Amino acid sequence: MKRDLDMIYNANRDNFDLLEMHIPRRYIRDMENPMEVYHETQFKMRFRLSKDVVRNILLPMIVCGDLRRLNQATVSRCIKRFTRRISAHSRNYIKFPHNEEGLQETQNLYKRIANFPNITGCIACSHISIINPGGPHAELFRNRKRTFSINVQVIAGPRLEIFDIVARYPGSYHDSHIFDRSSVKGKFQRRELPGYLLGDAGYPCLPYLLTPFREVRTPGERNYNRAQIHTRNVVERLVGVLKRLFPCLRHGLGTKVSTSCYIIVACAVLYNIALAHREIVEEPIQINDEFPEVPFQEEEMKVLVI
Figure 1: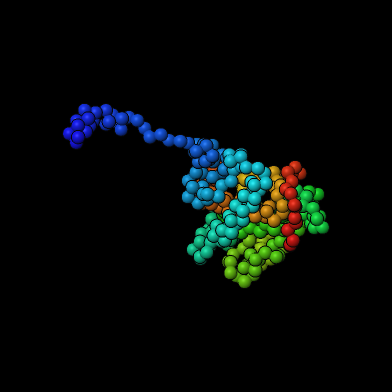
Figure 2: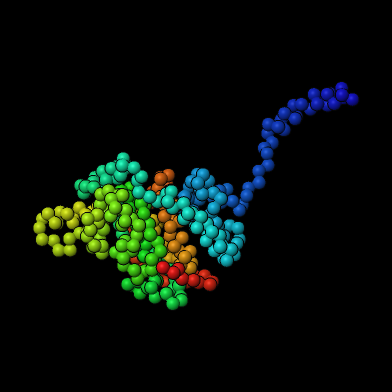
């Protein structure tokens, strides 16, 4: 019996080898997996990040309702859970340089822009449009343009990185009021952070926060304003790139206020991750802070109590 089997094998050995060499293993494509559905360029256009960054840092947190045919309520719950998880890592990805060498490098890079010394960051606020949250506190979110928004404070680094973000105050709150209540103000007051912040004329001029002259009387003041505004343009560019990378921040959010705050911080975290991995190549756009009304409404809308 063994001899017969050996004869059969020897007679068909060449055929077996041929089959092993030329018949590929069957591969079934997972049509629900965006990693397989889209090639690299399509994937990055859709999710704003490369496959490597998503695979190595964010997977398996991506939510895509149209691929998995989830209903809107399920997608909303997934987005809420996803953004809260990402926001929980904000301290790891949104922060000032943690050592003297990093802070000195930051100041050197800022000085190269317009020869303005000892600058640690540039500060500005930008409005993110939301729907009318309803309830007794709704009017707090109506901004100076009579639409509803969250006023978001951002501090930029010289490479357009986000050093600090505050995303919890209604659109009616003034920029200086948000800064006055922020933790970063205390850090500069206690000199835990060296150098100066640059802000626009909406902020008060403080020993650690430099603003432009409202009325220029001398050539020195004119040169100061020119350097201050040119250097401060970094934070304006940052906001433009951030809103371009995440169009939901430009067109408006249709979620409840608390979820919208988490979405904003999550976008900032993803932005810094993308920047660190050289994923951001788009040119910044000019943001005019026009707030269109968002048609989508989420059930059981609740206002974030400040």
